[in-house]
Amino acid sequence: MICHLNGEFLPLAEAKVPVLDRGFIFGDGVYEVIPVYGRKPFRIDGHLARLQRSLDAIRIRNPHAGIRWKQLIDELIGHHENNDQSVYLHVTRGVAKRDHGFPKDLAPTVFMMSNPLVMPSSEQLERGVVGVTATDNRWFRCDIKSTALLANVLLRQLAIDAGAAEAVLLRDGFLTEGSAANIFAVKSGVIVTPAKSHLLLPGITYDVILELAAQNGLPLEQRDVSEAEVRGADELWLTSATREVLAITTLDGRPVGNGAPGPIFRRMHALFQGLKRANGEPT
Ligand SMILES: Cc1ncc(COP(=O)(O)O)c(C=O)c1O
Figure (spheres, protein in one colour):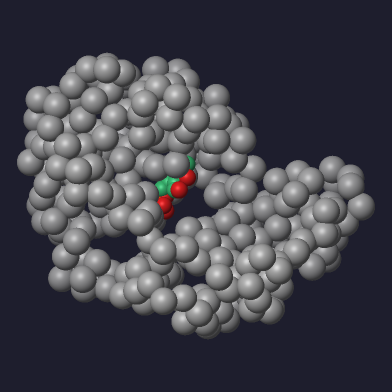
């Protein structure tokens, strides 16, 4: 498998980073995961804009202009056989003597790899997946796509240990997101999801759902969603770059709605597939 490290394409097994890289020492970096359909990155401009926002938030200069990122991503895709891929890219502050404060003008470390995109199985689409609620115990800058994912890792493992596919996170009685996904609820035909804030990652798939809802006349509200609304929802969905949109049909051992993926989920899933076929352009 070929990856990219600091300007070079090389086999993944040969890619090496110094142990003093601040990504290794502090988790001092940011990342993106970009789905690739039919060898074309999906919503690349959105991903690169979010990368820029994350880099600005942690004060790392962007090592590449957008056009260069696109070239590198295309080259990486070209090294892999699968038409559908998941490109991971990662920028850390670079290598320096261990000290919390950071030196100015450090050269950032850039790493990229690509894996085959594993889409949700037909069983997951037909039956939905299991969710469990958990207390959102992360920091107050969840809008930064940081590589420091310890809290998310522990929350995902909590879900796995409970036989679930995702943790549905609640902070002070309100929904935030999942351990690696945004969450939408549906009640009486209205889709609701928390508005973007420092408490959740602004998902690229989240934006796609908002656009598809607006274009197709599906009522959607971005607002605070209480725990009671989550528990009383007719439908619950999770969205992410690699899982697209999936129905959560069991929450904390109880059925969500009638326990099967709902009609609005099915509509949104079909719209999403149409958008993918049109390469991310409105159909
Ligand atoms: C915490 C968190 N929220 C939301 C998302 C969804 O973002 P996207 O749709 O851009 O994949 C992710 C993606 O991995 C995530 O890690």
